[in-house]
Image (tube, rainbow, N blue to C red; front, side, top):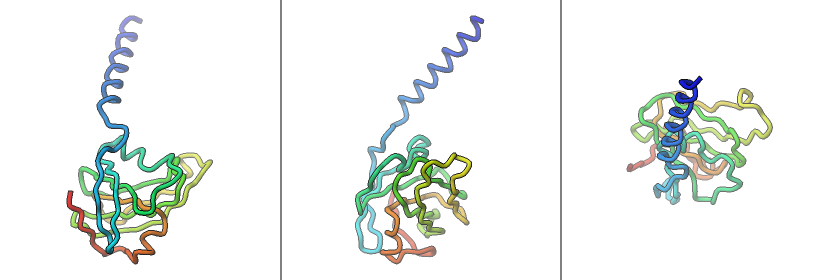
Length: 150
């Protein structure tokens, strides 16, 4: 019994240390010009920020968004868990070329297994989320390139 309690305490201590080491809110941002429009993108570059994304936000300014930066290029997939605002998801490869764009709508009340999955058709290393309809207004589509200077 004492060994189990010790093990639980060790695991709890490690979890707490990891919890306080990982930033809970992105303090990094990037200004990016997309089709002559300037956007300020919060950077999600660790697992916690990537899992949280833009969930539980009731609004997003017209020229704001989030840039997800992954450690390697691979097929990426997203969902709208606890996301309250409609979003455009822009999947981008290592060369800055857009592979896919989806407009995703909130799915309140759905269980995790019921949520729609938005996946890149080719490997991607970045994903940008903007307010829904922004990519249509900018006439942005797959094959277009973005100048991501990270």
